[in-house]
Image (cartoon, rainbow, N blue to C red):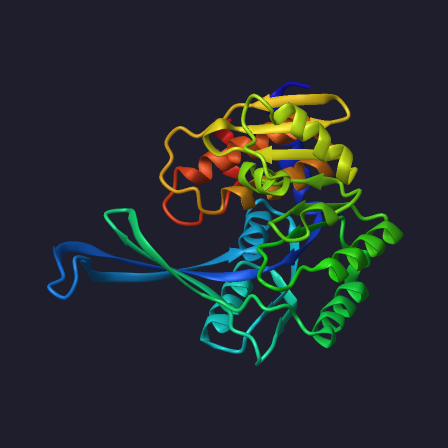
Length: 321
């Protein structure tokens, strides 16, 4: 089967899949304007605001990518009870993402990232968030929701941003549940609990995360050695290390493959990693081999980088593969 036939087959099967995304959800706010002068109060630019827009970020962006490609999606996460959480809920409903496992707690603040842009360039960013761990009662409440719905899903994505949701207790319980139900887990980790995602289907860190985890500068000269060591350490089926403009490194039962980047022009890398794991899980569950699934993910990430702000990949984007 040639590449075009594989892609058509993959795209036609997606709507049969139902994916659960578990992880930190956040709101991305974009303030667009013009810079024409410098403040007299301090040597900083003054932005004349022209428009404001919102996108859902973090695990919410992964969910949006999956829905955009045609799969059914549920999200399990937490927010505060504030205007940002209302915007997130509205975006999820508009994108046809099931949010019955999105819990709202009054003692938390919804993660908000506000980006100021002028002439399509990000000037600076302001973050407002609460990264404190959930209390045990909150973890139990969310986990029981997941457990009662788990049987309808083909795959699970754990999308961690170290914002307080994913911890060692949650990881162990999810791994135990997925093993019991024989549902594969695909992981996008952050710094905390990096080595705790044992025996998952896919482990997808970026180069900086691997460097931090091993306390070594990982580069093209040692990435094969480090990647093989990491895959052996966490016993994952597939290890995929994303490297920005350098592409991706794939490690599986067939060894090591370096996949070069597909981006034609990079305007914004926001959400590229979310796109990689979204496309990979769908391709993998549709029977695509690991190498071609990685190539499709790499292509999709390149497409995302050609847009300003967080962009959700669409089926039609693959026409130019």
